[in-house]
Image (cartoon, rainbow, N blue to C red; front, side, top):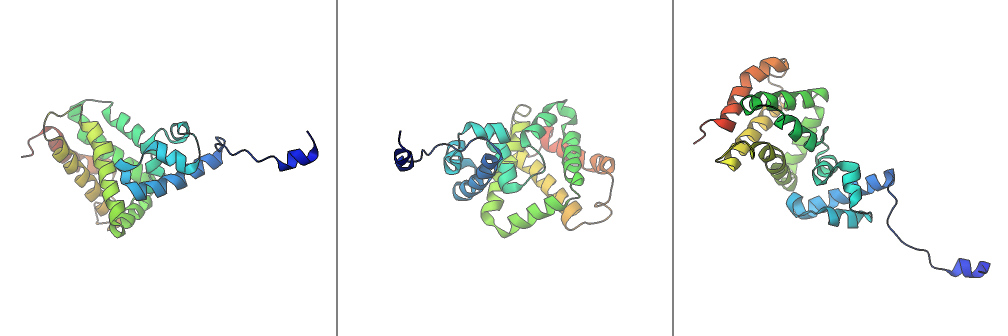
Length: 204
C-alpha cells in the first residue's frame, strides 16, 4: 500500500480501551445519565454507550450500577454491595447493632466531612435528594431487610433510613454534643434498639 493510500484511509472508531481513562469516562457519563434519568431509569447499557465503552467495564471498575452511582453521584467512601454483604453476615437479632456500628465506622473514618457534603448537596438539589432516597431505601436498606422481614418492608426500610440520616445529621452536620463526640459503642447501645424494633418489632 502506498504512503498516500495509508494517509487517505479513514481512521477506525471503536470502543475506548479498558484503562483508567475508561473509568473516568464512565464516572462522567454516569453522572449525566443519573441526573437525566434518575437511579431507576438509568441503565448500565446507556451509561456505557454515553462513555463509548463496553458495558462490561462497569462491573470491572465498579462492581455494578450501585457502585458506579455511589462514586459518580453520591461520592460515597464505600462500596454499597460490600456493606450489604457485611450487614447480612450475622443473626437478625443483632442487625440493628450491625447497622449502627457499620454506619458510624464508615463515616467516622472520613471525619464526617463526606457525609456533611452529601447532605448539603441533596438539600440544594431536589433530584439528588430523590435519587439518594431511592438508592438508600431500595438498594441498601431494603436489600438487607427483604430476606428477613415478612411485612411492611417499605415502611420498615424507610424508618431505618430516616434514623440513619438523622443520626448522621446530628453527628456530622449540626454536631450536637455530646452525641457528636460520643464513642461508637455508646451510640450503638443507645440507638440500635430503636433500629431493631423497626426491623423485627411492631411498627404499626
